[in-house]
Length: 242
Image 1 (cartoon, rainbow, N blue to C red):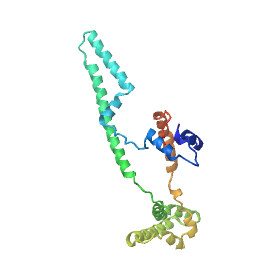
Image 2 (image 1 turned 30 degrees about the horizontal axis):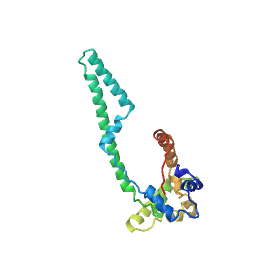
Image 3 (image 1 turned 180 degrees about the vertical axis):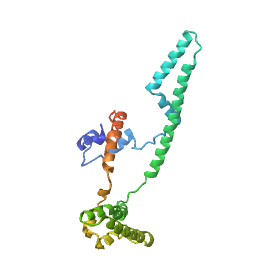
Image 4 (image 1 turned 60 degrees about the vertical axis):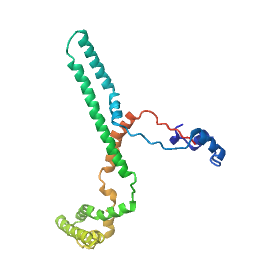
């Protein structure tokens, strides 16, 4: 049974239990004796030798090896001393396999470092939200200026006004350790033809992510999905012992 995609009734039927009563103590003891405890097995880390042997299990390696053997046999049959070609082919195959195995081993090491760094990571969404909101006013200055120009403002004058207010707000944040008050400075300036609420409406983070969402979707669709389909053609199966 493919446990992760099965419905509840099928799982209960396969395990011969009911959702109301579950397993009795006697059934638990019997199944523990039969299957043992559910223990996560330690996955053996691939060694350089395994990577090397894996590279040799390749159809192109087989083809080159056959060519080298045929070339060597022809040299023996026709009593030629041209053993350089088959030896060169074998040498290239071995050298390529060694280099690739070494690169795979380094990739494993990099992935292990990545897993060690990210395995205990905690995402504090509110902290991220607060820090993003601190930067949004600076990021929105271009949109604020363009909207002000549409309402009749002078672009050169608005650019200078927003630049001055941005520097003052940045100085307040960096040197005084206070909150970012750029929105207040802009909304209180009579040369900015926008109210505070109108300025705040431009501060949605979604307005400043560009094509990041579509780029990720395109990468997954055009690169990752075809690779997964090519490498993982067999249905993933698992066993659950209770």
